[in-house]
Length: 504
Image 1 (cartoon, rainbow, N blue to C red):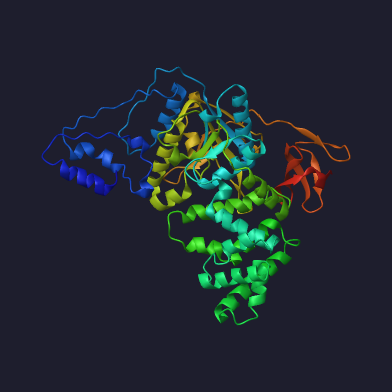
Image 2: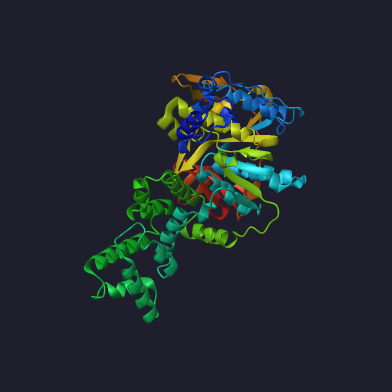
C-alpha cells in the first residue's frame, strides 16, 4: 500500500480491533510507484495488541534456494524478520556463473536451456529474469539464433519497442531513401513543427507524381505549396540524411548510429522527457548501439533485424519466459536464470543514487523475490565486461553475490575474467568501506574450447593470435560458428566473421 491508502485504513479502523492485513515486507519492491514498506513495519505500533502470524513454511522452493534467499535478505536492517523452511529436500545448489561479457552470458544461458530441454524439461517452466528491460535484447538475439521459442512478458520484444522502431526507421531512411513508411514514421519525430496538413500535402504530391516521399520533398521545397518554415525544416532534414548517408562507408557503423540519434535530436528528446519510462528508453537506445557492435556493417545489422521482425509470431506451445524481476513477483518456474548481477546494474546505481540506503534495501528485496521464483534450481550470472553505447565497461560482481551462503551455491567462472584475481568479488558497503568477501582463485573453467579453420585451412581456436585488416592484431576469445569474438590490442573486443581474419 502507499501512504495515503494506509492512512485511510488507519482512519477507518479507529475504535475497532477488526482489522486483518496480509503482506510480506521482504517482497515490497514497488517503492518507485508509491508503495511504502514502512506501512507493514509500523503496523504493530499503530495497532497495539495486534497478533503477528508469520507464514514461514514455503511450498515452492528447495532448501538451498530458501537458504540463499534468506541469507541475502537478512542483510536488510528494516524488516520484521522470518525463518523460511520447507519440507522439500535440499535440492540442487544455486549455480553462480561468471562470464566474460554479455554475449557469453547469453550463450551460457541458451546452452543450459537447450540442455534442460533435451532432458524433457518444458520450456514453459524456464524463465530468464533481468533487472532492466534493455537486458532482454542479448537473450532475445541468442534465442533467435538457436531457434529457442521465447516470449517477453510485461513489455514488447526489444526490436518492437517504440524507441527502437523509431531509431531503426532513421537507419532505414539513411540506407534506403525511398523507404516511405520509415520516413513517415520519423519525419516529425522529434517534433519539428511539421503539421498534419504539411505531411498530407507531401503524401498527396507523392501519389500524384507516382514517386517516393523523399523525392516529393525535394520537389516541393522549391515551390510555394509549403510554408517557408516547413520548407526550411524539410531542407535541413534532407541535408542531414544526405550527410549521414555519405558517412556509411567511412565511419564505423556504431559511431554513425550514435551520430544519427544525437544530431536528429532523438536522444535529446528522451533526455528531456520527464516520464517514468524515459530512462528505460534511453537505456534501450544505448543497448541498440551496443548490439550493432556485433556486426560488421550497418547493412549486416539491418538485415538481421529484418529477419527477426519477420519471425516474431509466437506459434509455439512451449516458450521460455523473459521478463524483469519486478514483473516476476507472484510467479514461479522450475528453473530461473537471474542475469546481470553486477554492481551498478543490480543493485541499480540509479536507485542507490536517488534513495541511498533505502534504495539498496529495495534492490535487495528484489534479489530475494528473484531467487524465490525458482522451484527446482536457480542460476545467477554476472559478466566481467559490458558493452554500453559502443564502449566496453569493466564490471564487478554484485554485492548480492557475496551475500550468498557458500554452502548453498556452486561457483564457476570463465578463466581470467578478473585478471590475476579470477573469481575475486569486491564491493563497497554502505559506509564506503571496501570489502573482499571471498576469493575463488581456483574456480574451474567451464568454457568450451571450440576449433574452426580459416579459408586457407589454418586452425583457429581460443587463444590463437590473429590479424584483421581494419582492427589490427588480437586474440580469439570465443568461437561461435563462423563468427569469432576477438580481443584486439587497440580496438578492444569485437565480433568478426572468420573470413576477414588471418592467423598472425
